[in-house]
Length: 349
Image 1 (cartoon, rainbow, N blue to C red):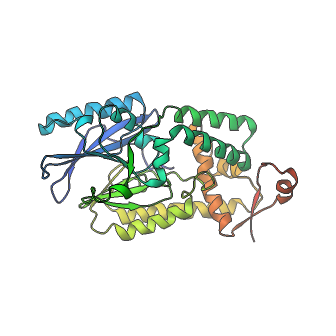
Image 2 (cartoon, rainbow, N blue to C red; image 1 turned 135 degrees about the vertical axis):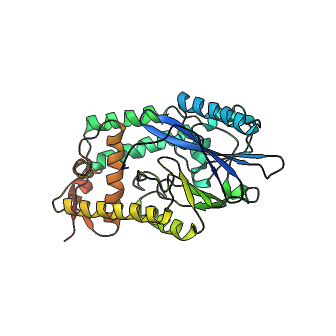
Image 3 (cartoon, rainbow, N blue to C red; image 1 turned 180 degrees about the vertical axis):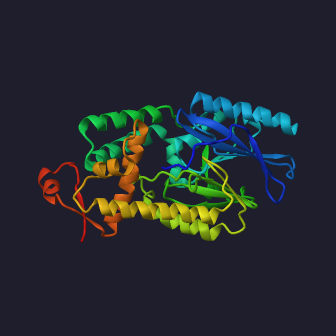
């Protein structure tokens, strides 16, 4: 994930679709180093007035407080009661904790439908299982990436520390089951950043979750960790979104700033990944592990960003290897040990 700048306005902003639905962008401090948004949609043309929340922020107490106080502020602004109990539905763009973490708080006060793509459903309903499974796959990835034993323990501790805050919730449904009740919204499944990533279109405004961001680029991880992720799926989804999003005048993302030129931003993101693939191929003129490549790509990073950098590099290496640009140079180590060992890749000449 890269960034052009870090400026994000702290104020709730208001937008309106070309059919009169009002959207409030609610800024939140999701984690200490991560800002983002949830969006409340107020459709006064419905009878009674209809309230939809797109994403919920993270599970952190600060984000939960900001979401609750923001709804109170909006209630006063529109002179209508708005709180968790008055929500008609919660629509989730994908199953990452900084987007669905607030669902646990909402579920304590509301029985409204919480909707997510079926590929991310178990992340919400069986969250503890998800953490165990991904921790196991992450351990395998880190070994094969060439991270040291000490580093692996540190990265896993950071991962579990962040994810341990989440909790499973019940009464979650899917877009597939709710499609008749959500006919006002257009939903498109775009795997890559997350298996169940969707974008949501309401009139001329698109909610992109983490599919397309500005000024940062959405984080990528290898499909080895989670099926339906990986750079190949993400490239396909970018092009599908570009073709599908005709008539969109404004894109509201999960992080960063509103996007006025969606097609142009898609091209920028695609170009950035192509440049990175070229750099990686150049680095692989000499045999390297993913960890060695990551250090050359991202330099000195700390904390959770080290893990993100490794996953991002791994996604690009996986893409190049699966398409025949790289080969493994230490096959003997893999054959003889019958256990996980660091994998060394080399560019095919």
